[in-house]
Image (cartoon, rainbow, N blue to C red; front, side, top):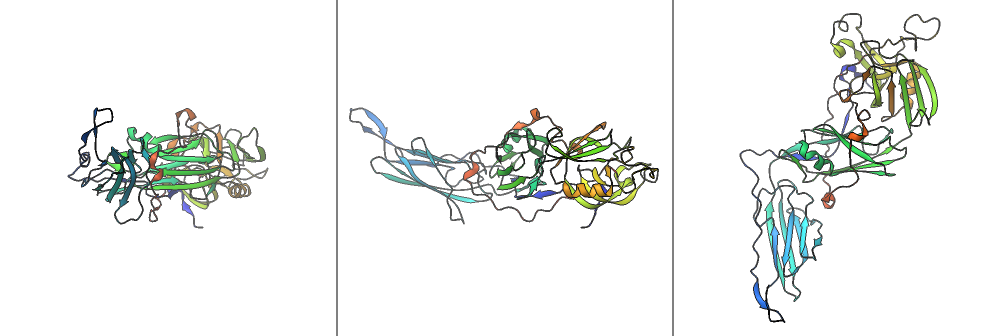
Length: 452
């Protein structure tokens, strides 16, 4: 496996289906709300009691009306019967064979579909109503949806379909344009996170284009997680529309916990997700960030592994000391376990040594790194092979707290700030899922900011 250059390390994003489409309207706007299609005029008839009442042959009203163009992707198709019940409805997109699923309501006098429509598509609605006397009427409506759009890509970061990950792994969705604040609840209302066994979870928007989901506590080991996004026809605001549904599933593996104390310079690894209830596997001496190059603290997450990372001080820090001064380095570093998105690693540091023969920076003696967590080559290799993506790494004792800018934040943000959700999805389930995209490029990694 080829190495990666330190200042260009970034957790990779796993592309999913095309989550939404944005409308590029140039010199035009959506058509006004369609008026109902024509209905027959009822005539008064006599009742057995001699009173006059309005009745007549069965009739139907279909919305959107016949001939309507520029219909929004979130438009509701409605059929209403008068003096009759709806006996059948077929909604067919031209060029396709299947009809949209439908149900009736209000005593079978009304029908509605709001599962999302396709872009630049022609639909034909054929509805039949039958009266109690046996009279029958048929109404049709042909309409066309909006025609111009550009893609709004949504992705689940880190997790690919079928993966097994650690107990701290968040679900992260990115959109390629910011979602207006008022439209954010509507977006996540169409994304279900179903867990077996069930566990409470919630969403947090770090910015308008990046929303994360995590459980209240770490995932239970063995949990099966499925993310179902029913975004077809969802209005994302500012002229952007959902176009496509997708589903991803992954599993939660064995519970691991790593605790790094920058004051005692000890790194402890546990089977289990708690230092209190888990089983301590080993405790290793380590060196962490020296003053001015502190290691970030908080609950970090293992993001990926790389056998070699080229670490360059000048490209990372851009300071005189790092660019020709006392803190200059440019070297390959091995057995790298990334615990942030911007360059903090647990890695082998063979220049640090053990025992009485060591005179320079022995492990556990002083903090001498440029922010990374240094281990002996043997311990770094052991940790590299034992840890999995999604494992929690708790760093304590440092004055520098991890934040969203470090690619962290999921476990730094208090649970009370997460909006509960994820279990239920509104009415889009009846819409067939769109095929996933296969030609989405992985983003270029972002720059690192820490050192070996």
